[in-house]
Image 1 (cartoon, rainbow, N blue to C red):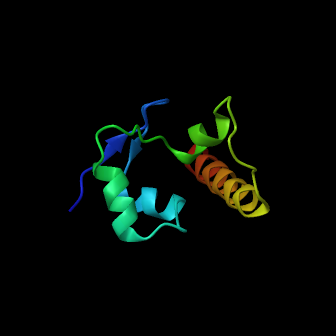
Image 2: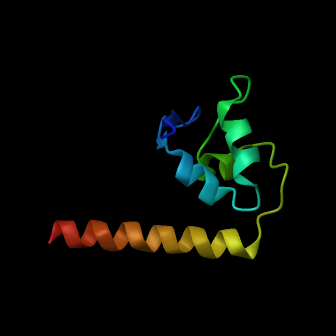
Image 3: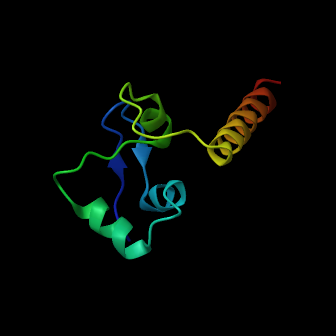
Amino acid sequence: MIGEKTCFDCGKSISFIDFCNDNSTMTKTRAKDLWDDNLLSICCFQCFFRRPEKPYKINKRFNSYNSRVRKLKLNNFNKNRG
């Protein structure tokens, strides 16, 4: 089992499975190489998309995924409240 890492920006715990799911275009071998590289800082996908330099274009797939995650968190929060 591969251990967890911490997001360098917000401190959130990131599992290797979450890292692979967030980077689904990457092969498992490439993901493992990046995960094991000590020179790279791993960040969660929320922090990546909040980076000020924005070296990417946010696509519709991310927006729909991110909105689903927000809805699930809100639904879980509301269920736990009442």
